[in-house]
Amino acid sequence: MMTPAAPPTLRVAIVGGGAAGLMAAEVLAAGGVQADLFDAMPSVGRKFLLAGRGGLNLTHSEPFDAFVARYGKRHAALEPMLRAFGPAEVRAWAQGLGVATFIGSSGRVFPTDMKAAPLLRAWLHRLRAAGVRFHMRHRWLGWRSNGALRFATPNGEAAHTFEAVVLALGGGSWARLGSDGAWLPWLAERGVDVAPLQPSNCGFDVVRLTSDGEPAPGWSEYFRSRFAGHPMKTVALSINATDGRAFAQAGEFVITEGGVEGSLIYAASAIARDTIAATGRAQVVIDLQPGRSAQFVHDEVARPRGARSLATHLKSRLGIDGVKAALLHELLPRTTLADPLLLATAIKALPLTLAAPRPIDEAISSAGGVRFEAMDDGLMLRAAPGVHCAGEMLDWEAPTGGYLLTACFASGAAAARGVMRPA
Image (cartoon, helix red, strand yellow):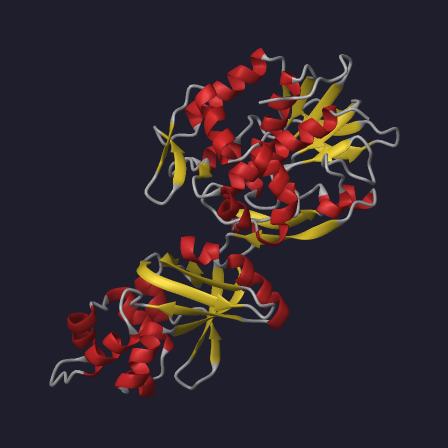
């Protein structure tokens, strides 16, 4: 990793010990900077470790142009950082820590042992050896009038002064791990343009129609009690937004106590959330038979079933049973269930109304934060010279699949390079 040479007296504070903050510390230390990292928690990398519980997804192997496009409206702002430290660099960085990686069947990249803890241990060992100093249980409280950083510590409030600062405080999801968004008002008070934090890669509450045709929140008690926690596998989901964006993808999701969550829902969450904000509701369309044509489904549904029940007929002809069959009964009126043409149409395009995203603290990540227009190309705040920002506290979002972690690494490295470049 190439880093510019820094003035020998430069001392920099990094506030936040997640992926972005740790990467900023590494680049700074490699450039000869004395880096002091502060974090409110007893240890660093807590969200990093949580992300690794099901297998640490470091990045993605798809072609670069497709990779960058995953960042939606902010892809142009992130592209230079990702070109400097993108998927290939992430894999090389892990290899340098003694952690080999492999590409899974989905194109996602994982450590060979699928674990986050060994990689984090090796990383912290290298950072300490490079001279990075860690200050745990230091919760940032903003600035004093003289520009010093304020921290709440177990021994009372402390203040420290540095030549430059990298803020890598995370967004607003999973507050118990340290990213609670408390920094927003402190930056706003200094004139920094900050977009409100919103949930991203999140679940949603649903609205259904009762037998009387009236909207009701959540699932019926029958459906909720029997199918909450059940996965909807081998389906496709699509949504068209009022602003022209569209989403269509096959995969799976999970029924929750009052709605839906899971990978397919997370992938559509940005469009769904923005549509709800604009119109009050968002309608997704579920294809329960994505591998079959509408004509095939209609022909199978229309076959005479004799004395067999509808449930038996759908199971024998199309393999629809369990939670899929129950969802049809939950969302469709009896007249539609009784009409083969209408039922076949619904099997291929079942409408589901999303009422609201789940709270931000339940989300995998968040959108909103420091707008790129508030920073220069070294991620320094125009309203606060010497203060750089990185990671999820910036106003971008991306789906799961390694995109979140890669952009945190890339922006942390970019902020560090911005600190060290000549004035």
